[in-house]
Image (cartoon, rainbow, N blue to C red):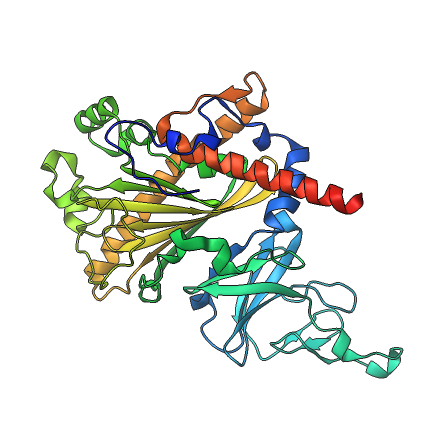
Length: 423
C-alpha cells in the first residue's frame, strides 16, 4: 500500500479503498475455527518479536519464551560466536522440556555453558549440538550428530530478536519489515537500558486489545479521569484527531501531536507531576539522544507526541517525543484470551531524580493501559453474544480496518495454499 499525506479536505480511509468504509465484523475475534486457522496462517508464518539482545548480554546467556499460540516453548541463547540462536525447548531423547526451573510452564533465564536435561542428563552445547548421552552404549547405533536441538529461524534487527516458525520463511526479516519500519534504523535503542515490564492475562481476543491502541478517538473519553474535570470535559467535547496515519504492507502507523506538560496551566497538572517533573508523556527533561532516524515523526509535528508503529501481527513499538519508547506484545492463548506484555525503556538514569521521573512515567502509563484493558472483557462478552455482527468505524479507526482485513487475507492465503497442496 502506498503512503499518502492527508489533504486539507478528505479522509485517511479514502486513500485505502480496498479497506472499504462499511461496518466491520468481529467474527474473527469470537470464532474458534477462525482462531485455529489464524494460529497456523499467521503466527506460524510471520516473523514474531520475542525479545531484545540486552536480555542475552554474554556468552551462554539464555531466556525461554512460552508461545502457546504455536504450541511450543523456545530457548534463545547467545552462542560462543556472539550470535543469537533459537531452538525448540525439547530434549531429543524423550521429549522432556529441556530448560525450566521449579515451574515447567513458567519462563526462565540464566547463563550456562551447556544445556542439560533434568530427566536423563543428555547435554547440548550452545549451538544446539548433542554432546553427551548418559550410558551411550545402551543405545542402538546412535549418531549424536543427528540429534541436536530443533532450530527455529532467528534474526536480529536493531537489537530486536525475531523468530519464524515456517519450514522456510517466505521473506527475510528485513523484507518482512519493509521501509516504513527499517526507516527507524539509527534510533538509540542500545542506550535505553532502564526497563520496566508489565504482564497481564486478558480475557479477550488479542486483536481487540490491539484495536484499543490503534486509535486515539477514545482518549478524551476513556481517560477523562486522569485530568482535572474542567479540562477533561472540554477535551471530550472537542474530541481528538491524530495528524498522521500510514499503512504499508501488513504494518501500520499512527502519529500524534504533543503537549509540553510544563507549559500547561497549573490546574491541568497534578502536584506529583510538578514535584517529579514527569507524567504520562514521560520525564520533562528530554535526554540528548542525537539525531533521530527519518522514519520518526513523519507528520513533522511540533510539538510531537508519539509514533505508534503496529508491526503485524502482534508487536507494537511506540516512540515518545520526550525521548523514550515502549513496546507491546499480544500473545494469543485461546480465541478469547491472550497475554499482554508492556515494556517501557528509558536511558540509564544519572541521578535519583531522573530515576523517580522515569518511575512516575512508567506507573502513569501502566494506569492508562489498565484503563484500556478494563473495557476488553466487556467488549468480548458482548461481541460473543452475537446480538450484533457488524460495527461502524470512523475515519480515525482506519488501522482497525486494516488489522482485521490483513489477518483475514493471511488466513485466506493459507486456506488456498493448503488446498492446492492437498489437491
